[in-house]
Length: 128
Image 1: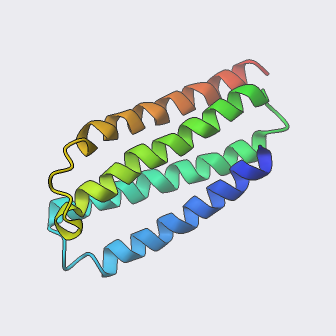
Image 2: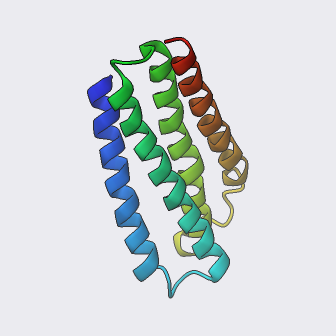
């Protein structure tokens, strides 16, 4: 799991940089200010949690692995649900997904996944 979290974190961090550049250059003229802020929030939280995955990988031999595993999967779920839904919501006019009403409720589930991941990291530290 250690290698998987390190590799996934590095990959998702690289993707965050790519998406950030895409938003700053290609989408700047196509999205309004609010949509661009939503897109940037998605990129920012993806990067935070990609770095958190790398941190988990580094700590893997030092802390309780069971809780680190749960934390890592929660961070990955959070990136997919939170950042993924924000990417889609910010570009709904471009993608033609205005009728995808289910995206709004998905975003808070991703936020809860992030919180749960941080709590599990806390538990991994305490259980050491």
